[in-house]
Image (cartoon, rainbow, N blue to C red):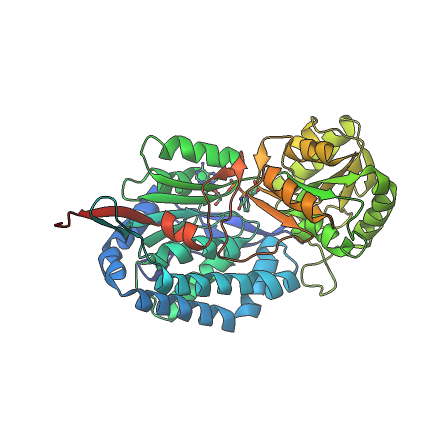
Length: 476
Ligand code: NAD
């Protein structure tokens, strides 16, 4: 059986005590591989390697570090199909989505931050008190912890800026989807990426994740995952005064106004709810529709949801695959049962597919208000609710109800309304007449229970560096 081991100090490793966790193929609901069940000793070995590699890596001219990231990107791009296949297998992601969107985005992450390494600069201030300039130096060894829903995409989104800024990294992918991070480690070894600059430690969150967060040799933590775990990490890292970036859950609203071209955008609106079976933090799971078009929208939306083909991730016609794990499948079905208890009408879906694996039909619910758990708590599956609204004020109140504040999309042809609402929505990202449009230079992250700090572009380069003010007294 395939075993996914750690990548420490430039080499692939098994586990010290022959401890492995099962890795499942969600389309079959069966174990197909094992991943190293790491522990604090593995984290310690990775930190030692990273600390040893830090002086040389940090001292390299920026363009040399950029070149290494470019080489890794080139090697990954040349193996796109293999990586997409691996991601389809252990995450249940449709192969076409992995091949056409997510692996290319991982390549783009590496290239983007390779360029950022050569373009990043710091400020100088003069005219008030002497001459001041800011040095931005790497932090040292940093930890990154990423989730299962976009495995390589989010893994590279963190390691790339960390490395570009001159840090060395101890990275933990999700134990649920360890395949592509391991393959990336193998590629790094193949191209002779400087040993110890990038280290990958597998294992459970409570063991390896917490060991990374608590390790005294790790200066900063960049985490993407659930709000509950983010809170726990903040509890450990806070007293240690570690730099922390938390990208957490969401419960994103989609605001559809009667004047929008919603029929023409229907495919995007449906994707925004159900792409990757709703397992994207940016999916719109609360669809707010102006009452004048509510019935027509509901009919068209449900028809389009019913037409989504669900199937084996390797089936090129399948738009949706299974949910990632038995535990997540159970959680999503329990959320649907709770919605029924809360009085929801199930317009379509609402059940598992009668086949092996963890497939849940795209589910559209109506009849629930903003205060029920279904509209407040993240489900992270193919489940969306519809709520009508009468005017801008009510749309805004519904959109801003709840504790999360990650993303929102709003659909209207009224420019004035679009800008007014974009400013008033409590969300870190607002899309107007589009969804998931990404420019990697923009600040990425959420408000409230959706997180702390921003990733992307200069925000990431700033997070992974320490600013130091140098002030010089100039003679008059
Ligand atoms: P999770 O929080 O369960 O796990 C995320 C990572 O944290 C995994 O690698 C896990 O092993 C690790 N972990 C778990 N417990 C830990 C602990 N006590 N200490 C340290 N690390 C620990 O999240 P998940 O189920 O893998 O991912 C889904 C969640 O991620 C959803 O809530 C989703 O909204 C969120 N997400 C957010 C964004 C964003 O950018 N805001 C992007 C993708 C996913």
